[in-house]
Length: 60
Image (cartoon, rainbow, N blue to C red; front, side, top):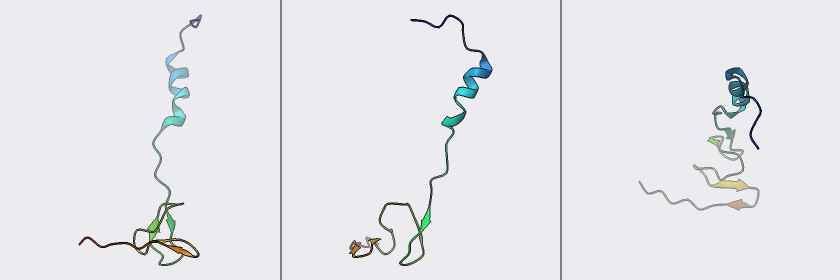
């Protein structure tokens, strides 16, 4: 099936309005206070949740 009429330029652009890029969310680590992505380990201290901490190796 094909549409009976073409979508106008305005309708097409309004339909794409929710596809804009968004800034990634950042939260503060409760252990050390640095910025990290939610639901992931802290890149500085390795904190994930109470009782779980990852051992990070410094390759510097």
